[in-house]
Amino acid sequence: MSEQLPELVLPIEERDHTVGPRSARYTLVEYGDFESPDCRNVSGTVRELIRELGDDLCFAFRNFPQPKRHPRSQTAAEAVEAAGLQDKFWLMHDRTFDHQGELSDRELRELARGLPVDMAVFERNLASGEARQRVREDLELAEEDGVGDTPTFFVNGLLYTGQYEFLPLLQALQQAPKH
Image 1 (cartoon, rainbow, N blue to C red):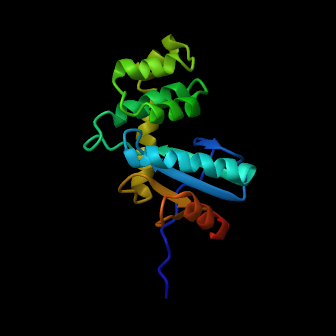
Image 2 (cartoon, rainbow, N blue to C red):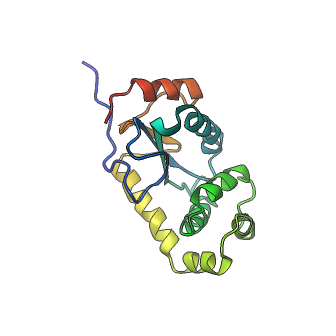
């Protein structure tokens, strides 16, 4: 008898940052850390999946910073969320991974400025704690979902335990039961 894989406690919903329609045939949720080399590496794979599957895929990214291992991960997650409050989440997400070795406060602000975002609003979103609260909510969801490391994926609502390359993830999406 095969053991049932853990399920997402909270499926993709309005609060999530998503690419693709929520009604898509396949869903992929990633818990990630902006300073994790593994998350940076898999971000290209996710982009390939999005191109390949188009509107058949809804991808959501949830923050799971690991500050004990990656000291700038919390700050980076908050900066991405602050940009997200100006509808620039995905641009900042991609730029942060592309500049992973450059995540000082000054460099994160330069990444945001280049999007561009309204820097006064960006600074307010950071200072008010609104971006920090959003990251905290993702961390609480991660705990409920039993996430222990990054990247962690859920395919059609079920924990994915396979390889992080394009073909294995594509096959998992296409073969997983619709959730």
